[in-house]
Length: 453
Ligand SMILES: Cc1cc2nc3c(=O)[nH]c(=O)nc-3n(C[C@H](O)[C@H](O)[C@H](O)COP(=O)(O)OP(=O)(O)OC[C@H]3O[C@@H](n4cnc5c(N)ncnc54)[C@H](O)[C@@H]3O)c2cc1C
Ligand SMILES: NC(=O)c1ccc[n+]([C@@H]2O[C@H](COP(=O)([O-])OP(=O)(O)OC[C@H]3O[C@@H](n4cnc5c(N)ncnc54)[C@H](OP(=O)(O)O)[C@@H]3O)[C@@H](O)[C@H]2O)c1
Image 1 (cartoon, rainbow, N blue to C red):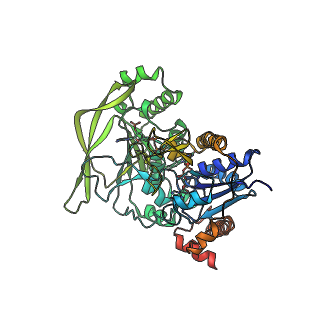
Image 2: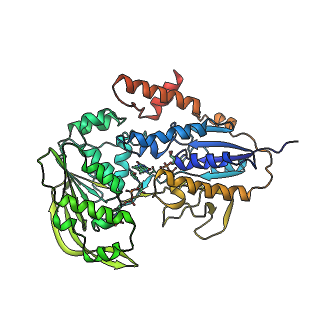
Image 3: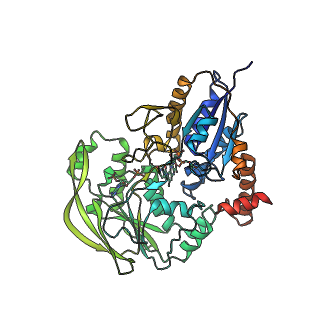
């Protein structure tokens, strides 16, 4: 009698889910069968719904993921959500191992008075909205009277958002940006986006490459005051042992200070050592402006941290987008570290609590394992580490029943990879007809209806 294959459920078909599947397939010691679940009918996670629409070349990685999805022994179970359509107990009964790769789709709160306003929103929502994420397309961003916007945070997400807000609308129209977002941006009288970093240019989290891209935009001025561009003594001392990119960022920002404004119709203004202090609201909690405050830097535990100086000023903004990082969302039945916003684990082996006992057969990879940072490729070594532990732990597999009949009996409409390829072909067809890269389906119902045709 042949040994049954190891049945592995991977929950979340983003980069870490695909890298985990690829690592399982690469070894030949244990035969494996992989079911790759996603709550959306579409795969690829943030590559589809996070990566900016004007960064199409990055999305080419989807082709490598497609090759993994179509390998023998791999099935895609789209439109199946852990916690809604399937429980951890179901998975434990049907699989020898589970790998949670659900990403970090929540957002951090800024904790500033007035943050409850409908015009103080997270960049997480804004990004999902312009990328046509089906669960965010209805979260309206009314940009009709928005002339000035503050983006809080100076990471790559902040730069993505700032770029999309000011980029030429006809250039955006050729991408796969959501038509709803494109129409709102076309109608918006945006003149200025202020990108606010609480520390100095050297401590900015963005990549020099992304800042250079912003600097190269046509018909957009990018400015910074000499005071804000200055690298102070605290940063200068810290830079001696800092990553190379920190000095590159500081140098790039200082070249910007010398740039005169060209009077372009839209501008991005970088502000450093600046934090929001209060968002001002009227009785209807409508944003009427904000108070910003100046910081100085102090070294704490070896790195510069911002300390308010008490100097404040008012900024006339109609929208605030906080781009201050993502956060994992807890799932029923799955351990969660509420402090870090991740699934507690030791090198990918899930633990009951942070530092607590290991949960046999449960693993995690990607952003939900280590926190929301790193590029697509960083998830590959991370997933490999998890899979190495999974394989080291596995004993001779017993026979497990297929979960699919159970899902179908429950009335779950499982979207297969073949179904996804039909949706993909239709999106590309609609895009081509409209002179665009792709025209995404932006509701799940629309996708499921199309699959019935
Ligand atoms: C706005 C933005 C832009 C970025 N741009 C770039 C870039 O240009 N280049 C680059 O290299 N990196 C970029 N990154 C980083 C990159 O996207 C991440 O490193 C990567 O996507 C993390 O992969 P992941 O698989 O851990 O999570 P995700 O990509 O978030 O995938 C998680 C998947 O899990 C699914 N899921 C969630 N909950 C459930 C559930 N309960 N049941 C079933 N499925 C579930 C989700 O639908 C999703 O498909 C960007 C990140 C962001 C936020
Ligand atoms: N094009 C790309 O390659 C691309 C695009 C998007 C995202 N990504 C990647 O995805 C990951 C996530 O990006 P991200 O931009 O969300 O996160 P990030 O790189 O961690 O940046 C978060 C920013 O928010 C600031 N911040 C945090 N809390 C704050 C607060 N309370 N008040 C003010 N500012 C605050 C941080 O400042 P401090 O440093 O002072 O904490 C930092 O500037 C990163 O690894 C990024 O490189 C890549």
